[in-house]
Amino acid sequence: MDIFISYINRLDWTAVVDIALVTAVIFGSLWMVRGTRAIQMLRGFFAFAFIATILAAVVDLPASSWFFNQISPVLLFSIPVLFQPELRRALEKLGGQTGSLKRLWRRRSEDASIIASVQASSVLSRRRHGALIVFERDTGLQEYVDSGILLEAEPSAELLQTIFNKTTELHDGAVIIREQKVAAAGCVMPLTASYLKDRQLGLRHRAALGITDVSDAIVLIVSEETGHISLVHDGVIMRQQEPEQLTLLLTTYMQGRGSETA
Image 1: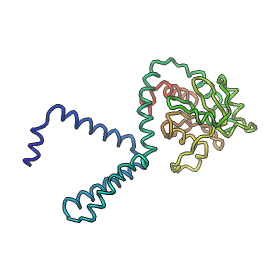
Image 2: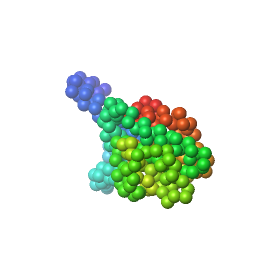
Image 3: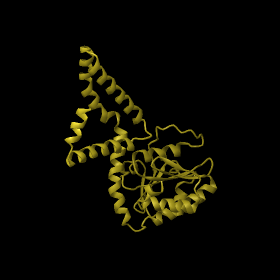
Image 4: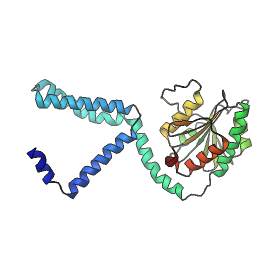
């Protein structure tokens, strides 16, 4: 108790700020990896550290202490490798915060592509033609643009309907929209590794989740099996969207206010 009181007496405003910063970093790190496989791995790390500390403090086990001392630096260096997807996602989110500030001052310049996409998705839904439309935001998608056919075309409902017509060669890939332009079609998206409980969610939904796992893109999906229109943002699928709601959500997310409505 006396040791605790002595520590309290030595605290000054710099120590308080220091502790608050460390607490904020730890809390922010845990918040960004919530709901991911990293949580289970962190539990394993904490359990290992707890056991090693108890053994070193309570029991005199020279061999075990030597082993833990040797393996600890290896575990520290392995953290960036084991948590690479989560670290990448966290850094992209941090960078996306600065990009969202720019979008707050941007006029609704994406309206042309949004209107064309919503109109096309309504027609494709009635025809039961599948579609996958990816809206690029702050995270660059050039590597996925390069996997498809470059277009750099003005967006229109007719163009998108033609691309996703079942008789065309490009209908199985994704369309990427960048800065009001249809940048490319027939693009290959990464598939998510997450388990999907709903059997109605096929490859298009896995691809939509996959690209939102590695970027801040917004994805519009038309299901070929059901005709349902869905929107994917930040790994969350919002299913069976009506045109009016779809337009509102797309505009909101593209203007950088996604966090307020998610």
